[in-house]
Amino acid sequence: MKRYVVRKGKKVWIFSHWDEVKELVSGFSDAKYKSFPSQVLAEQALQEGYEKYYQANPKKNLWKEQDLPFEKYSIAVDAACSGNPGEMEYRGVDLQSWEEIFHQRFDLWTNNIGEFLAIVHGMVWLQERRLDRAIYSDSKIAMNWVREGKCKSQLRKKEPNLAIWDAVDRAEHWLAKYGITTTLLKWKTEDWGENPADFGRK
Image 1 (cartoon, helix red, strand yellow):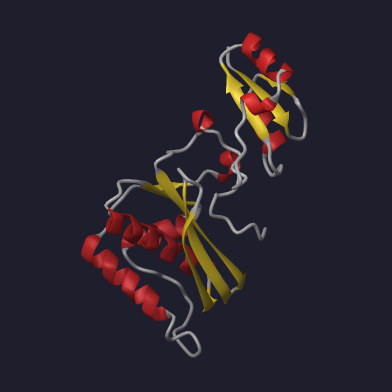
Image 2: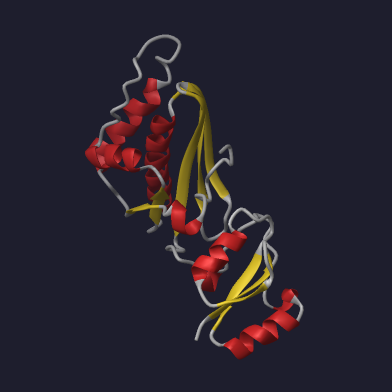
């Protein structure tokens, strides 16, 4: 029966259920944990040095490849906004390398617009590189806007944000031309923790 060993977390021990482990490692910096196919192997791993089983990750990625609950060959996108509207930024993260692959900042926008642009930017990025990967977003609103091909923000087009709407127009034109070019998936924050592209402002 599968067992989970937590070597660095809120509690160090062997656990039978993922729900227990998730509570102990979520939000814990440099957490170390891994699943094993039996109690015997789990006990052995707990007694031995964790370096044998757990690889250091400079990106503070809590997930190990064999335990990934999400599609590895994909990218995650997210946005953050200081105020509503306010200074906004969005980015994309490659879920294979955990590297930031694009990052944009704007002066006066809303979070939903940023989420919308991040998804479209992700599709453009993948298309330009001819990569067949899914895109994860934690925004249902932005995903619906992308599927409808239209940013439905109530933010008015007025100074000083007129120039910023050019990016929205380009995104909508791109969607009108190419449509949905890859699989869009919802990031399950409650089950998996924060989106890897999250800016950590919560």
